[in-house]
Length: 186
Image (spheres, rainbow, N blue to C red):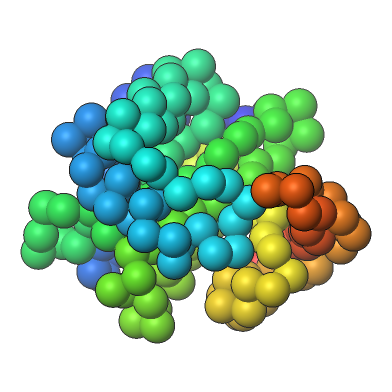
């Protein structure tokens, strides 16, 4: 058993009822900057708000390089009737040896509560298990992020761990929870 590395030959675009999940491009940097500089998206994530468009451009380059190096896949979520991205999602890292990947994403505040994230995460789970051949997918999340935890549990993820004081951010230790879905549990 091994993962399907052929998916890295050409970026895998996906469509859901309302979304196109496509490769993140440099032209998306301004939209990503807008999302990550407001403070709302990062309220449960131990990372600084973006302070300049260059931060976003650097992130886009890193995301593109992850795919090129077969280490991760970052999709831009675009409404099917529009061009501007409303979020990003994907596999932040892929552990080929253990057939496991870490999923992550963010959604513009304007689209919270509209079940858009459900569509994106379901498509990525399906891709992970049925195309990439993953055995398990994990999500690392703040225990305070009730919205993300609700979504993960609704889609079949189970709490696997709770780490006390796992991350030091801005001089403060924060907890982290790990939620996992295994291919034969879905």
